[in-house]
Image 1 (tube, one colour):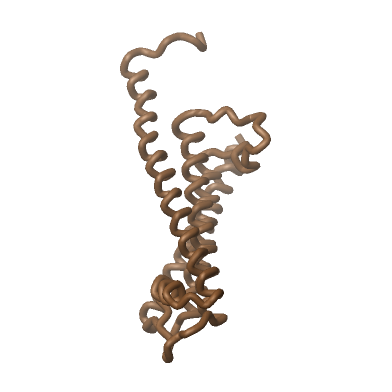
Image 2 (cartoon, helix red, strand yellow; image 1 turned 90 degrees about the vertical axis):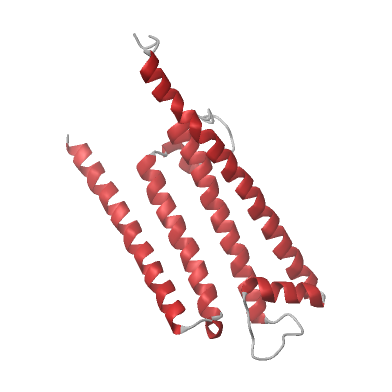
Length: 193
């Protein structure tokens, strides 16, 4: 009975999961854009370290740094802001991988990586609720890095922007805690049955 063909309507509904494939392919393209952005910023950082003025100005513009006096050489604040921006790109890229791989595996089709030596450890026990918690934690990490960049560069932001970024970050924290608590409560009630 397990191999019995599906009736036409259930077969169509089940096959509709493949409509998500272009979405995951689009996220892979977005991942490529992030890789390009990362490499470009890293290249500008290396060039600026060797005294290239145009690369330094490109970095200052990209990180939104507006010092009181013109920056003519790489300083600790600029380096810190650029490195935090690079970490931000890496964390967003990690989030993309979780969504692409975990989402495809959970909602579209198995990847068949059970015995693959490079299978991510978290993929072995991924499901929709685990994916939600992992995504929530990733968003908090990204928000933390973004908030740290803002505080380091606080002179270039109004108090209103600083306040709202902090409120949004705290909202992310509470949302992730609520998701994790809900997931835990659901698993506890399932274990009792």
